[in-house]
Figure (cartoon, rainbow, N blue to C red):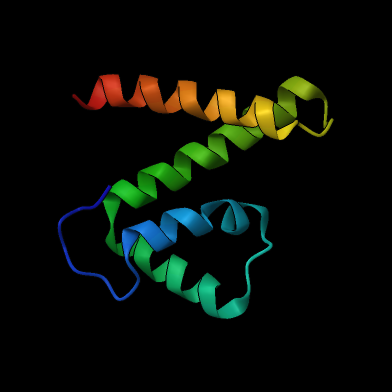
Length: 88
C-alpha cells in the first residue's frame, strides 16, 4: 500500500508499526515518524483508521475481554477483504 509519494518513513514500516501505535505502545521516535507519515499518506491513514475501528468494535463486542491473536487476525482479514472490494 502506498500513495505513490516518497516519505521519510516507508509505508511498509508504518504499517508494521500500526498495532503498537494504535495501542499506545510505540516509542517516541517511531510515534513521531508514524504520526508524520499518517498526515501525509491517505492509504496508510485509512488503514490506521480501520485498525482503530476494529479495536473499538472488538472492545464493545467483547465487553473489554482480551481478544486472541487468532480471532483478531480473522477479523482483520475479513475487514481488509471487504475494504479491498470497495476500493476496486
